[in-house]
Image 1 (cartoon, rainbow, N blue to C red):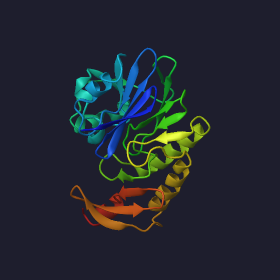
Image 2: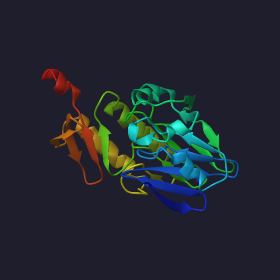
Image 3: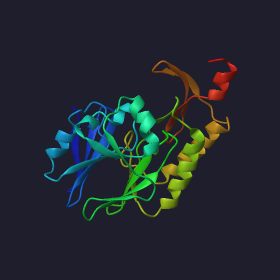
Image 4: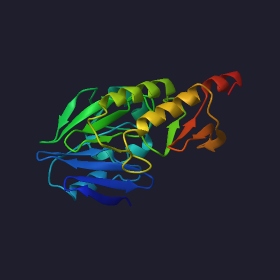
Length: 237
């Protein structure tokens, strides 16, 4: 069962076996940011904390972020994420969001930032009032999954460079994995690490992850689980 932890008078985090999601309250409504891995009751958990109507915003559609989605008839997500979401069994109606859209909770605007690469439609959510960036999986100090059909390291690097344009608008990053909070300057370190992987100058270790042979690149600040598709093509994988 996920653990509920109060961050401040209007914000909670839920720790769900290595992944987390968040509840943010304004004065008109509340927003769940993701719905966990083992929490089909995520909406009920949120309802136990607030009487406000609750909306759902998904940072992306990987399985460990959508377990509570069936409780919502509709939810906010980038339309670029729909294929990944449906591939993982996701149901319901997507309300499309894109870069620059603002979801107002009532004296608590949430700005959407497109952040593709980890998945095609990954987004980050900027909590402007509390000066926090909710980063999904893209900015974290754990192991970032960059293998499989939907991952694109080139887009990931460009997205992180774009994210740096928002420096000065947030003081902390709330990631869905790893430590919380992390500092904004982690973004620059992740760019450097990802570029080393892309340029084949980083050293990693081959491991098996969910039946996939991938390389773990572990840096002092985070790790990447990466699949070099060009090598796989050469080896007829």
